[in-house]
Length: 334
Image 1: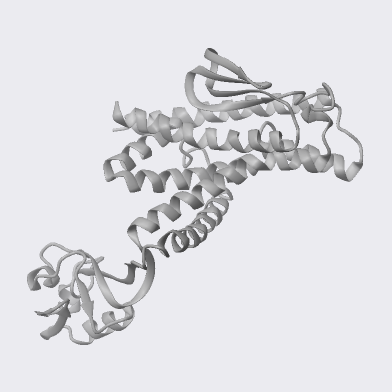
Image 2: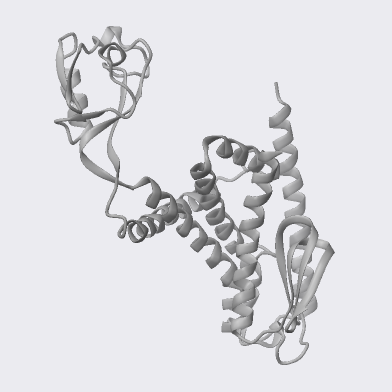
């Protein structure tokens, strides 16, 4: 039950943040917002504040914004009659909020954990069972001083295979004997230890939020590029639908709160990028029609645009069904 709740909360937060972007931008530009809903209809509760109805709906997946005249003119405060620049800003506000959410979440994570930076020592990331490293007493998170570069350490160890070497681990010295090449299991090194020269650096408390957001922005951008590059080789076997996302969110939940935040940040950036794709029914698809209007200086007929988005929505739903079927197959496969 807890895993399902985590899954619902993550999806709801991502969609609500996205819709809040559209909501705020529409309000900012004087467009009438008729309804802002939490969840999807049928409506359970609702009340009008000012000119907008705020509702709580039965299906607890995110929310929605309903603006006046989204597809056809309905007065001078309708979305349809706004300038192209205004419509573009409103459409882009949702993905902007999702990207910013990713930045904020990564910033919070690194404010708590510290900033990953190269240091002048090596940190043990793992020790293989039965390895010389284990026999010597090395453990995960031990700090090996005297080496600031991983390759220099590897070269040193390989140059002394079969010989006793001395290592300074924190404030204690250790001795280990690297294995000969013929005695080294495949996939392991001479010592059987994983190392890194990157560690979490804790700056003064007042600096951490700023440094965390800066590093979080870099991390968000890196994930964005990774997601974009993976889209070139996308296929329905590799993409996760609701069931796949539920499984990942369950795994993240088992690893702790920070893992949930990281997964939410990655998913938020993923949602931002996917919504920017020039596909009908998505924000990117709607933006394409604004660009066409700007280039041709003619408005696309509303009925044609509505039909394109309707077909696009049907195709997206069909694709989601196919992906969900593949998720189920992977789940029940022996």
